[in-house]
Structures are given as structure tokens and as C-alpha cells.
Length: 502
Image (tube, rainbow, N blue to C red; front, top):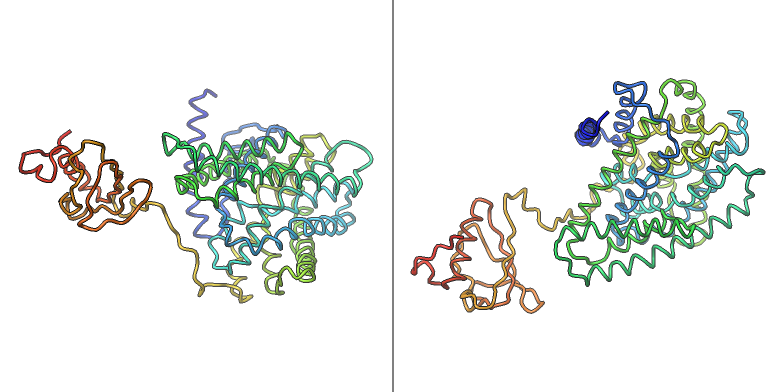
């Protein structure tokens, strides 16, 4: 197919995926299921018959897409909401992951007649909760801030240790890496990744606050470039790129930056595009004719994960947190944490690592993980609101975060104008009321010598002032003409016949 055909097909897929978000939002399903379905339709057994079996390419593209998703998670996470939850989330993302891997491997090794290496590998692949799935579902639920913070922070932190364990278990070396080797390697990669993220994040925030870029659109691009710099820099140091990029963007997202709302919006758009491309690609990578053979073992493994490994890992983590006097997680919250450990793209991407390395039995692991993600996301996602109410942890009566936009003027059919008064302008000395702006326009702020204030009708304007003027879209041209007229002829511009034409 030619380039134009690929562009046409890609545009149709993206538009279809965007429309499907509305369906997913109404049903409570993570949109990943629809994206995976699109990938299956485009694959070798679907309507487009696209043959895609390059696990190595899928792995590389998948890891980059996950870095983008984690960057968006860091930029949009409110540190004040998750600060109290971070210690508990770190325990879940480290000790909890280790317990989940061991419990899962012990249970399925005999049940599914697997080798120890494959059992541990499958457990490691499934140990990580998915940030995109968790964010898309939980941010719509009225949960207590601490509980929601634990789930969000855990999904941001636990990708890093699972990637390390999966990578080490996928190495073709014999014998299998020892527990000590895995722990030492994991400790180094996590510590180094945290150091890289906490070094680059504050430095980037400092520079972005002080570098006056000529266009507001450059700030979002700069932030995403910093995210990629952090990720690739950490990987080059054999550190955890995922942990580095999450911590760096968490610092940047909670700093006072120019055009912060635009940066967050750009990051959200990039993350949505990464999710769409990632899930569609993974759907294309799956072979529908091979999936039926793995349905039964996949469902058995999923039951072990959801009803045994995850609850035990949460219980052990909660006990450690309580003994350390870090937090107290009630049994109701433990049940919800266990059920809300959603899997998504992360396990499927991780399953491509042993496949790309040529490990025997890795294709079967990929197929089983695909089945588990689809079936149990379909079961768990829509039932979370009901479960939160049954357990009595729903926080519908509590005050929730305000949804604050920097300039939500599209809904108001209004425009925000920024006006600079140049030297020599006859607007100098004019009082606000003497501008005689239309009734649907107002000067809402004046910035003078680096200080901002809300003007009164009798505030005198000075050369060098910057004005923020809010006006309805219908009156915008009239407002601009009036401001130009006053700048040219002063407050008596109308008397002189000046109409402010361009």
C-alpha cells in the first residue's frame, strides 16, 4: 500500500478510536478493549489482512508508548493528592509485586504444567497494573483521595520493577538468574532511575520558568522532549527509564510553569494517541487462530492472579505498611485495591520481551496474557463503581477536586485578548471606563512592571501595561477596533472620527 493509503487508514482508525472513547466512558469499560478489537480487525485474520508478527518492533514501539503514557500520568498527577499515598504505593509496587510473582508461580506451576522459569515469567508479566487503564477508570470514580492516590501512584511506580524482572527472566542464559542477582539488579536500576528523574525534573522546571520562549506552543513540546531525554538517558545508564520519566514529569507537572494548562492538554493528547497506536498494534500482533487454544489456561491463570496472587500481595503490603506505622489500610480498602488492580497494555507489551528474545514458549505466554487482559478487564472495570458502593468506600458526598481550566472560553463563546500598550500610545493616561468597550467586554487584569492586579473603572493605563480583555466572540472585532482607535487618538477618538480600522 502507498503512503496515502496508510495515512487514510490511520486517520480512520484514530477517528474510530476517538469516537469509541464516548462509548467506553458511558459503559465504564477501559477504551483499551475497543482499541484491541480494532487491531484484531486490521490484523491478518481481519478485514484489512495486515500481516504483523514483528515482536521486536512491537516491543520497542510499545516501550516508547508506555513512556509517553507514564509522562502524561506524571504531568497530570496532583502531588498534594498522592503525597500521603506514596509510601503505601511504593510498598505495593515493590514488595507487593514480588509477593504476587511468587504466589502466582507457585499456584500455576503444577496447575498448568509449566516450568519454573515460564511460571515466574508469566507472574512477572502480570504483576504490573496498567497506568492507562487505572487512570481512565478510577479518575471517574468518587473515591477517597488517599485510596485513589494509592492506586494511581502504584500504577505509576510498579512498571519499573516488573520490566526489570521480566527482562532478566527473558535472557537466554542458563541457569535462570538467582533471586540475589534479580534483587541487586533491580535495586540498582530503580535507584539510578529515581536519581535521573529527580535530577532532570527540577532542573527542567527551573529552566522552563526562566526561558522566555517566543511561542506558547513550544512549551508543551519542550516538556515532552524532556520526558524523552529522561527516559532515554536513564536507559543508556542501564537504569529504569520508566521510573525516571514518571518522577521527572511528576516534578514538572507540579511546578508553576508558563502555559501549564496547554502543556497538560498536549500531554493528554499525546498519551491518547500513544494508547490508540499501542493497543491497535498489539491487537494486530495477536493471532486469532491461536487464541482459542489458550483460553482455558489463560482463564485459570487469570483467576489465580485476581483471586489469589493480587489479594495476598495487597494483604502482605498492607500488613507491612501497618507494622511500619506508615498507613492503615482497612480490609474494605484491601478488597477494593485487590479488585482494582487492572491490567492493560503493560502486561501485553512485557509479554513481547521474551518473544522478541526467542524464548521457547514465549508466544504461548503472549497469547495467555492477551486473553487475561481482555477477559478480566471486561469483568473488573465496569464492576468497580458497584464494588465501591457495596464496600462503603464511595466518597460521593465528599468535596472533589475542582476542574479548573486556564481559559474555558470555548464553552462561553468568548475570547481572551492580550493587549500591550506601546510607548507613544495615546492610551497612556486613559482610565478604564474611558475605553468605552462594548457591554460584553471587560478588562479583567493589568500587568504593570511584572506585577498583576485587577483594575477598577478609574484605573489609569500607562505605556508598557499589558491588558487581559475578555469579550464575546461576536464583539471581538468591535473591541479590537475601539482599542486601536483609543491608542491612535486617545479617549476622544470617536470625536476625531477615528474608528480603529486596520
